[in-house]
Image 1 (cartoon, one colour):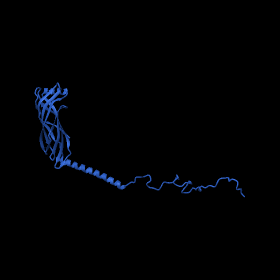
Image 2 (cartoon, helix red, strand yellow):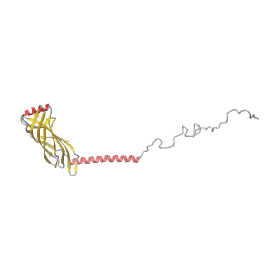
Image 3 (tube, helix red, strand yellow):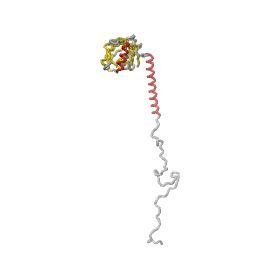
Image 4 (cartoon, helix red, strand yellow):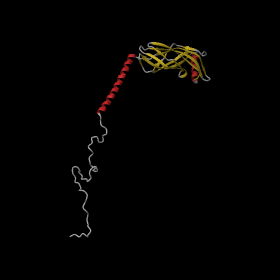
Length: 249
């Protein structure tokens, strides 16, 4: 018979659950159920890691919009080209027909230039189907590349196949110039002719019926416009006939 007064020795029986054995669901036999199982496979989600889903309808819509934009551009360009072929807009022809210079004086002490120019232009519209409207017309007189005087010309409109005479007056009073300009003018006056350059800038619009082309900046340059001047007289007129000007946009 066992003595119950003696202390009990040894370890108590284990109270932990039975160690699981490896099987198909738990090949390593870990005692911890998912999600602590580090080899637990990810959930069966077809969109796992792919937040964007391809939408064929949206892609087709974008392609159609792009195709419509390209088609619109091609049609618009074709219409403009056909209109241009039909109308054939041409630049006006401009020339200097007359020049009258009075009170012209050059001072070498200042140095400065004074004078009054009255210049007549001939403006020809060669277009058969388009009229031309001129606006914001500015004109400048130069000696070589040195500014002498400036003026603004009144706006006007030309019909098809028409010619218009335009007059412009310029005035300079003791306008400062470089000494080289004074020397150049004095040399030219000794030869009897002083050449001036005239520039014109204008906003022009071509029109036919209800159709109007976009307004553009017209550039006109009339070079070497000769004015007969003696060494003592302050008056002079255009020599050598009219002077054709270069016209561009």
